Amino acid sequence: MPSIIRRFAIIRTMKALVTGGAGFIGSHVAKQLIKNSYDVMILDDLSGGNLENLSPKTQFINGSITNYELIKEIFRTEKFDYVYHLAAYAAEGLSHFIRRFNYTNNLIGSVNLINESIRHEVKCFIFTSSIAVYGANTPPMAESMSPLPEDPYGVAKYAVEMDLEAAHKQFGLDYIIFRPHNVYGENQNIGDKYRNVIGIFMNQILQGQPLTIFGDGKQSRAFTYIDDVAPIIAQSVENRAAYNNAFNIGGDTPYSLNELAKAVCQAMEAETELTYLAARNEVTHAYCDHSKLRAFFNTQPKTSLEVGLARMAQWVREVGAQKTELFTEIEINEGLPAGW
Image 1 (cartoon, helix red, strand yellow):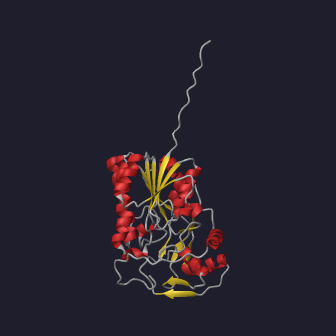
Image 2: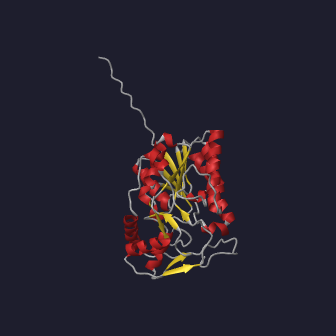
Image 3: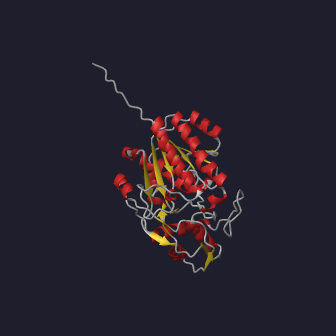
């Protein structure tokens, strides 16, 4: 009787490095990757992240992307299929006053990762850029527009985008760029007074403080609930047609900061005064067109501002007010906005 030989294919679990994975967007992307059965390693220096955001199913390294020796060692000992680069210091307005810090963390740190991704033949490098690359372009911003960043943060993000394009042409490193904007939701660091206006507002309400607005509050942004972006970013590597493209990702409807303040107060069930501070140097209106994202990923934002704020408000009440820390590495004090 002939013997029956059965051969079983060994399917290796895909391994992903998530930088900034203890932070806001990064932690949600990491959890989505785990849900999708990826083996996930997180690299985060905890400057803006929190250990409580980590899933026990991830491997965690406490370290900075600016430590090139550490980056080289991690890539040497691990075999990453994908790199999700979300680590950044995303204080756009503050970046004028921390130029060296900004470029070291947001540009040089990114280049460290790109170098090792090339050397170790990473299949795809996923990078979260920002709509700050568009600067004062007329909204809605579209990917076909020429970027015109107006602050060092936007300059750094666009420089990384250009470096990824050059790395692809020279070395064949595939990449996907996402340009999210004004993302909010659970796990956000509401104690950071330099970025994330919704978190700032909610933290001020918890502390019984007035909501502070730079300028007249008529500047407008489109706000994006985290569950409408993290799954797309995590799953993007499975869409080969998306490789070597940049995508706007986020909410469609712009709101003025005055309108946002009212909506946050309603979500927090609070009546709070508004305090208007001197206007700072920032783009007045910034929101995006998402036609390209929908063409490639067949997706629509699912969460209204009202629903997203209600979900975040519930979480914020549970975690409570967070202490606001002063940024201690200001490099230029001339013209620094009041309160910073």
